[in-house]
Image (tube, rainbow, N blue to C red):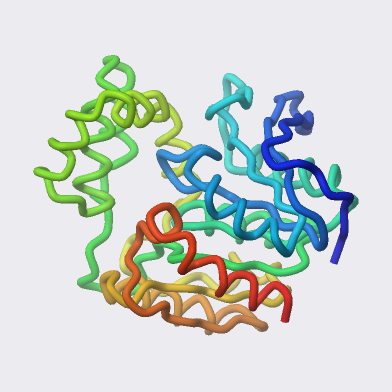
Length: 278
């Protein structure tokens, strides 16, 4: 595993990805390197607390995925560009690093490893695969609906649709979020990247078994974490993933749900630390 010199928390830097896009990140801590990969509707501010906890043991890179925060973007999007972003960050760190990703960010981390990026280990929190018939998946026309809402400038409606129809959030919860101006402005500012996460997920949310061939390039040790209070579909997805990866296992974190990485980082960090240091 790679190491890097200690940097003060909050030190911002940039790398240039293969297509020329600048990717902004903060680096902190010292020791083996780990890169944090954010979920949908999130930038590096959502994992600041987790980064600080992990920086006690690791060199932590907490970055803004393209199109978010201080990072740049490009006119055309493909998940491969985000894999190249991760590769550029890892190269900056010395050539290898572990990855931690949550939700769709976990799937992006998997795609990076499958593409041959030099990943030491993968720690994943609730990759939202839908692998069993009858488990709730997103609407079949999700990409079209989100794209149409964004084209009409209805970013708030796009966020609401995604939160209620994909993340399963009650409408009343979204209503109260709309009453928090700073929070809602941050979410609507990230709405334009929703098609990115939809593309990252691909066809993995259709209630069908995972395609083992799609992930055969993931040969590194992998730990899949799920919350004990999350819907059972996440645990089914985690078990399915461990069955197609050669070096994967699954742990359930008691009392936690899908939002634990942001809402309960002190309870998530020890599980990541134990696995990456083991």
